[in-house]
Length: 234
Ligand code: AP5
Image 1 (cartoon, helix red, strand yellow):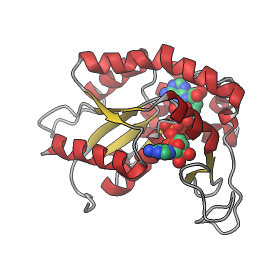
Image 2: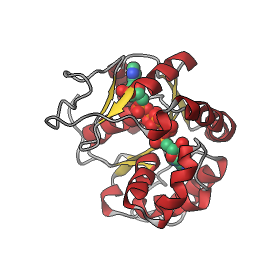
Image 3: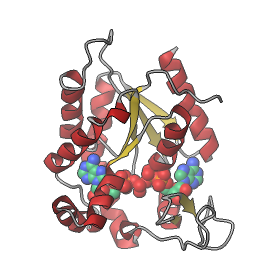
C-alpha cells in the first residue's frame, strides 16, 4: 500500500494487553502514515535510562508490573502531544490505560489540542488487539529488542537472522525487557484486566471501539488496521 504523507490522520489509539502487538503495529502505522508513535512504555523507559525524577519513580513501579500514576503519565503525554510532529496525527501505544487517562485524553483533545481551523474535533480511532492468553505468554517470553535501534524480535515468531543479534545494527546483542520476566508478567496481565479493560468499555459506550483479531500473523493484523484507517478517512 502506498504511503500517506500529507493527509490528516488524527489520533489513533492502540489498546490491548501486554504482548498483544501494540508496539509492533504502532511502528508500522508510524512508517506508513509518517506520524509519530507515542509509546508511554518507551517514554517511561527513556526516563528510567536517563535517571530523571519521573524515571526514578517509574522504575520500581514498572519492575513490579504495576501502572505508573495517572498524573505523572498524563503530564508526560501532554508534553509529547504538544510537539509539532504530532500535528497531522499520532499513534498512542499503551495510553490511555485507565478510565481516568481516557477521560483526560478526551478533555485534552476537546480543549487544548482542538484547532479551530478544523471542521470537526479529532476524536481518536480506537483499535483493540484481541489475543489469546497462551499466545500472549509466548509473545512476551519470546520478545527480544535491539538496545540501539529499538527493533522488536521474537524468538518464536520473528527471530533475527543470527541468534540473539540485531539484523540492522551490526553485532548488537538483543536484550530482554526487565518486565518480561515470568514473575512480572502476571501482575501486568492483572493490571490490564482490572485497570485497562474499563478503558475499552468507555470507548465501546461512546461507539468508538473497533476490535481486531490480533492472533493473526503480523502482516494480516497490519492489513486489518490499515483497512480500518482507510475506511475511517474515506
Ligand atoms: P508498555 O511498554 O506499554 O508494555 P505493555 O502494554 O505491557 O505492552 P508490551 O510492550 O509488552 O506489548 P505490545 O502490545 O507492545 O507487544 P509487541 O508489539 O512488543 O508498558 C510497560 C510498563 O510501563 C507498564 O507495565 C506500566 O508500568 C508502564 N506504563 C506504560 N504506559 C502506561 C500508562 N499509560 N499508564 C501507567 N503506566 C504505564 O509484541 C510482543 C511480542 O510479540 C514481540 O516479540 C513481537 O515480535 C511479537 N508479535 C507481535 N505481533 C505478533 C503477531 N501478530 N504474531 C506473532 N508475534 C507477534
